Length: 309
Image (cartoon, rainbow, N blue to C red; front, side, top):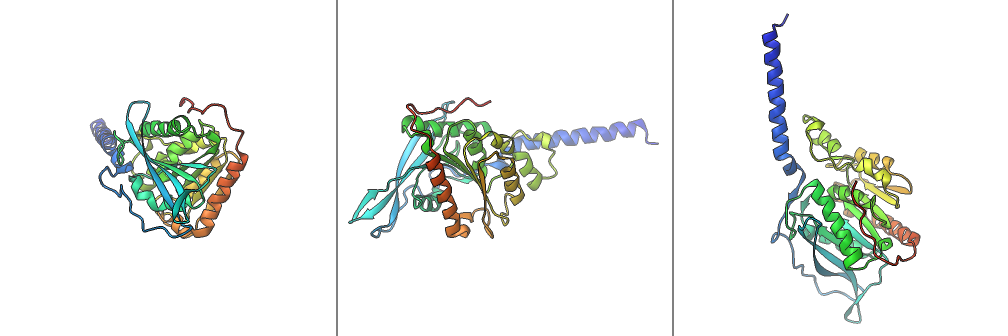
């Protein structure tokens, strides 16, 4: 039989190892989640070739606003303009996409996607989370939720956009603040692309050796999406090499109706909009148009984000 001294020694080693692992996870967890690029890195003054007649280009407006905890944030409000008779003319739109990007870079890295979305046509309001681009602070889970709330207030209060004109769009990491926000505000719709069910599920895929109970970050989209009342479109590719396809399917299955799932074949994690081509943008357009058609009568006053539970 093993001696009590041996058992105590082995237990001490296990406890010490767990303590070291817990400390390492606590110190390094955020570095595995967030990969921000801060200003001035990025294409902050994009230059476009002279537009051809009938071509749609973005009109980009800098927006500076603050989260409830005082952190100053930055975003771009992008509107489509069509070249007509040698002059840019504003394209009429029915919907504003509130866009939450992935975990790397900053909003300038999404310019190609913005230009393609404007062709639908929609307006696009894209923000940088705290610690990204020109936004101050350091990214955290709670911080991203506050940033999403601030973006909603910027649209509905400062810009007086009716909530039933807003479709929330979350890509990859952005799916987490998008789902969290959509369950608390009367948005017209929610689009989640190439995103995950929870931080724990993602950690199990990329760091299976880390016990789940050591993670501080939750990003529990799968537990929240069932409370999202507006129409939902979940987009994922079986070829996604970063966020497994099964997590996208699981997120869709957890969502309450009305909901749609759109599969993009042969698309890497950051290639969905290119690989998806016309069918992808047709699916976006049809979903957005259906959200606009369902829109309730204009409200007398802008809606504010409900308190987070």
